[in-house]
Length: 426
Image (tube, rainbow, N blue to C red; front, side):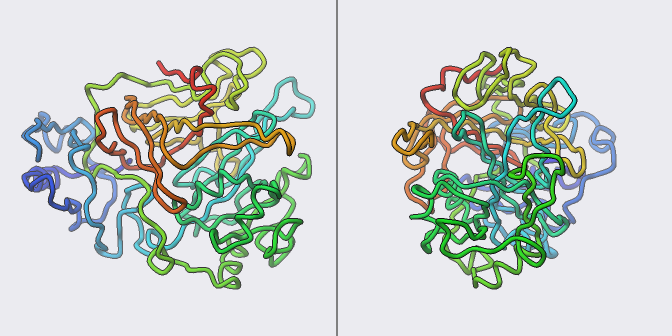
């Protein structure tokens, strides 16, 4: 959510805000190319403007050019304007072809490893991850977390990786976004009965338990050679050219409309609006695993300190949460860019250990449960609901109102309910 609006557009939005609450709200910037303004917003408008929004609440234009109370102005019916369309995954304006094609979800490790010759540990270098629109994180065996990154903007990427193995709860979450699921390996007893059916389109490495898969090497979707010097399991990657050819070879539907399963990702505030949630508590440093050592998956390191805790730190200047783990910023190895998102979600799920099959975990990602949504430096406690495999994750406040997200990327942490007590923010 980095775009700013010109003063003339802000005035136009104030007029559009007079529409009834039940009417579709079209984007107030349809007539312009959705690019950031290079002018100083304060010079454009002088004193902050204000006026009533559609629900009668006072509107204010912030110093960086946003109209507040965006929760009352979600994106309505999406339309193509000058070849652009508002993304289903981020709410931002992107090329219409990018928005309408199906995203893919790829499994990425998040291990902490010993660095040769040094006295500290580091996360496996992850390549391409800063381009993901949504990142889903959940614990796996060993009580570490693994990531599933959803990509819609990938034309400028060459490879993504490392690529790791699948667990069934990730597959079920990918279904909610009509993703084409990409993995290298799987927990066979739990994933094979799903992935070997038409319930989920997938691009996988041909291994035991995979009925339809690809080999590795030149011309294939997957290859080795990433992260030289690391263990073999962290050297795997998926190349975009091979992925595209794999989708073509398997005859998968390439657009949401063609496949017909996509409902929605999230409800976003419309262009130029900011969902402020002024009456809710501040949350500018967010800890999915708290700040003391525990076995909930979001480890804080051996010392269990705030410095080593997995956390998101809010920056009020750009309205984004920056990711830290294991005592350092988490960055993309390709561009050294720190991972940052506009929304962070804690989805509290029932969990258990599948003791009969080793240390594999099970999480209930269907049904309903508690949720914490962090946006614009605030926390909204409420519930999540998901009715079926292909239903969207819906998030509601404690009054039953749907929570409107701010435009931009989203990070979803699956929190094992047994360890919800450790969740904290400040």
